[in-house]
Length: 487
Image (cartoon, one colour):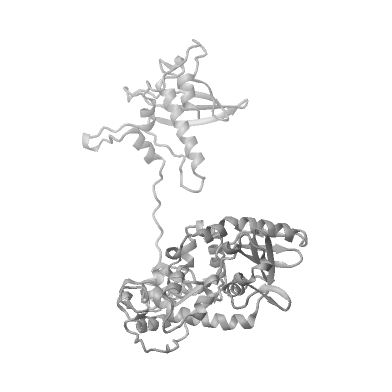
């Protein structure tokens, strides 16, 4: 309803003068106090006629006056009148009160659906006025009264029978088996036992302050009873949330504690009895391991150039070729791993794949074939291929499995050349490296995520104090339950 336009800028049909009476009226107070009642409307020749009754502000026992308003269906007020002495002015207090009533009703109808709040259209009205003692009189401001009238009283809840112990336990069991995270499972036994029951999407949630005082062996024992799971649906949610990669606030949250593909070789070659602190920090605290140099800046700045050249070349030989961004895929079968390829690719002939781009600074202005000794490539079977000993090879093999893609295109870019190599999964290679990485995760990464055993101050000479320098082996712990649960 265009109340302001009518009361301030409206022109009388009788005097041809502007009303200019919006602020001078007490109409809003009368509406807020409930003086407006018996409002009805009808449509005549495409126009809406609204009638109502408004009590006198000074003579409460007198018969209410009857204002009426004519408006278009879209809220433009054409004219108004009232049976009071000032009614011919078309903008008396009673007309204004009726207009505010209509405006409030219209606003509530726009904000609420018919079923969202019971009886939202009911406005406060008073057909009789009670005489009260001062301490019982409502001195609320008109604004406060309108706020209260737009809120319906809550309906009393129906009596709900109390759950039996058997029903309650059955409900919690169903909730636990569903794999969804629930706070109640952390406080109700037996679901809150030392097994750290939860859907640990972020492995940072494993940390507990009291574990800081525990030894490596104690934390490994706790890790035996620890398990976490990532459902197919939640894995997809994480991948979508991290599409922006390092620009996403979730990027480091979900990477922390997971052995990502780029760290696979480091996790496989570090000693289990004296693990590399650098590797641990890079896996557990990825945002703190960032560094910037000419080499990293060069790689970031030219990744788009490499992907653009790659896309142009592939589009010429692959029908319906598409290249899209990738987030942080997590495989529900291996929730302790992660991968972040530089993109996802697809085409009509080869299906779904991924891409890993490298723009080495040391080869920026070199021809790839003339710089093999500085590159990650080697001549194998008469062709230029990625070295199987290089960390990039481990990275790409992991990306294929974790992302569940058919292949990965390795792209090496310089200003003078472009190397594209398609790499397929190697299950024999993968099983050996996956098992070694999982052992490293259980013996080293999990204890670190639980109690920072390797990075807290009492870590000396590369070993926790409770591990002797002569220790050569680490007893293989009980296998941690890594659940696969698809939704």
